[in-house]
Structures are given as structure tokens and as C-alpha cells.
Length: 139
Image 1: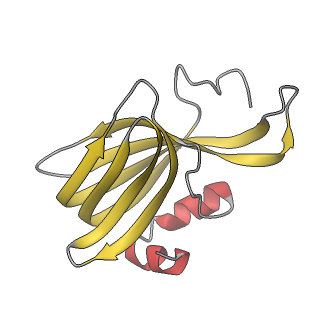
Image 2: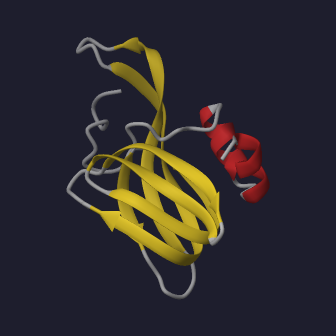
């Protein structure tokens, strides 16, 4: 789903663009929690950040604009999640239109991966780095 389509479907997408300066792909982000509810909204919380072009003394890209992005999921109709672990790094998050709603695909890297099909998605942002993150001391 292109940025304009996602903005039309979920106006709160603008919050992501305002915080990061662009629509993030969530590459190398970490899913820190998944909260499912049969009644009311569910939540997928993702620690993400902006990668910079400079590297640190270890040769890793520096990062800034760390935040926990809460993806608010409304009216889940189908899902498949596999591999939740002590660390859940994803390659990306992709949104696609389907006959049943919007499909959010969590690209696997290490830990959880899968998809959720729902009637609606929205985004909330809380600035900061979660406890026990590898980014607590390095960025």
C-alpha cells in the first residue's frame, strides 16, 4: 500500500511521517508486545527508530528518533503469528488491501512474523527506548 493510500485509510499515519520525517518501513525494528482482545482494539507495539548515514566506533549505523509505535488494530478477522521470542526483530511491516480488510504483514527476521487482517489500523507514538533494549546505551 502506497503512502497516500495508507494516509487515506489511516489518517494517523501522518503522526509517523511527522515524527520520523518519512513513512518508516520498520526495518530492523523490534516487536516488544502483542496484545490481542476479542472485544475492542488490539495492539502491536514496535520499537523503531531512524537510521542515520554516520557510523559509530563499532561500525554500526547511528540511530535517533527512537519511539514505541503502537499499531492499534480494530476488528481482527484473521491472523497468523509465529515465533514470538525474547527478541522479535522484523524486516518490515507492509499493509495490503484484501477482500476481507487490510492485511498487516510482519516480515520475519528473528522472532515473530506473520500477518493480521483487520477492519482498521491506527498509529500512536511514544518517544523513547524500551527497557532492556540494545539501544539503551548505543545509538
